[in-house]
Image (tube, rainbow, N blue to C red):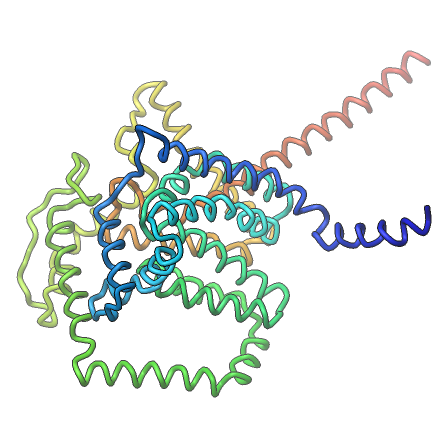
Length: 436
């Protein structure tokens, strides 16, 4: 028996310890549940009498991907540049799977397996209980992730990519291993070119790094790779100067200005909170005079700043959900509904406060920075009616809310233990008095 244990038992024990104290065994049911939820919806839409939803942007992505497969070069339009990462990924997946339904299946599977990243990030930032709660919430309370996994859009893969980037970031900071540092840099660069939101996200990640990175280690790293970093910066600068001088950047800048004007005149000027008119919009008479820096965009923002500030305030409230505009605090039922609707936000804020109090916020603030990046994108542009642009923040809000729940559970258990101890002490005193 001892020989069998030495041969089989010890390797198994080492494997279990290597799996970080049963974490993979804990994750397994959540992986299966998450896959069940996403694939169940996928196969429901694929069943007879049903169909996969389509969006106007989906048709553009598919046409562009097929054009890339046919040998069309990358254009200079902002959509060609800012969505380059997703366009190439979609073209690659269509080349392999042939049909869009294969892409949707892969999106559903990827969204399901992303629960692994949710668990691991929660575990590294907080504790195992938080990871379990976050995994459960991801399985059953993330409808936006399930919904967008059946659209040919950039959202589903982008959410998983953000989780992967944050996972590599935390591993790189915790371990200091070069492998994770390289993986983080690669995923961060891909996030940057995947879709426009990625630019704001990486900007916030850089702020997080500057706050949390070990200054001495950062200086050493910059000194070690100074020639590589300097060469990369010089290459980018030379490419920009060359593009500007030869007119290669003109299509990009022109399309960028055109889209900015479209947003200003079709969204801002009408006081729209969303990408369509609603009763909650802020109606005003815009000033179109161009008198600041000879710029239409800057002039519009400066001359209409008071009304734009009101619009931003309304979008801030709208970020919570469409239920904001249906809130009625004059009745008991309305107050109960308000409390239910505010519960996720309340748990998120509780998680933030608890992280600050317990000294975990410095490290866990990456969750808040990702939410801030998505929030800024929605406020500065607009909030689409289906809250698609808010979807990337969902898993990060969820993880922080899970920590809020864990703190509530911890507090309840602490009170229960204290109550039990008092009850035992009271019984002992009674028994002693009866004996006397």
